[in-house]
Length: 227
Image (cartoon, rainbow, N blue to C red):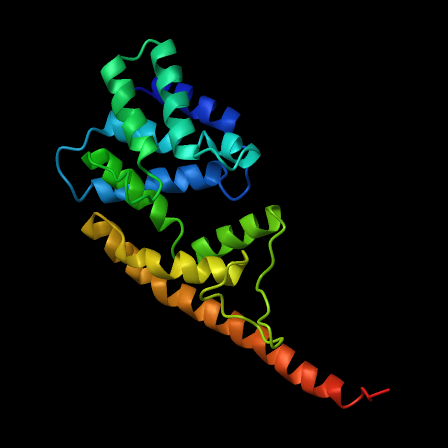
């Protein structure tokens, strides 16, 4: 890939980014993760991989404005339109599109090509460890969702089985289980190195929240009297 082509793709990506949890730095990290993974593999088409990494989240704005849309599907179509409009071969544009449309975890739309699997893994790596925790907290703040919800008895829920969205619910539903969902050995190894930090953060945060409610409610009860 020429520097001119890279700049063209990068500038288009930058014009589409409008989400601090899925910002340009996330895109760059995904690209760098992908290149690190690709070094351990053979027959990687780097022109396809780099383009797919740069453009994989360009549909985020549309999904944020209309949650019924899938940013991967929208982004794939936008990438295909952009590439073909700028003279790229249609088959190449289609391969980039397919990578983007399968980078989001869905049972019925899994990545097939090597480049698509690398993108999938690179994107998921950015949800592991403390980086994944930080990005999730940012996103929860953007959409005004809480850290945790309370159980009927007034204690703090650990997130497991919750219907109401919260950081703890997201951790139990997604973040905790992502470590076994990689296609490449390199990505799985990198993710495993990060797992302990994420577990520690969640465990400490839950313990602090739960303890403050339990001790605080007991203390408050001493000062409240029946009328």
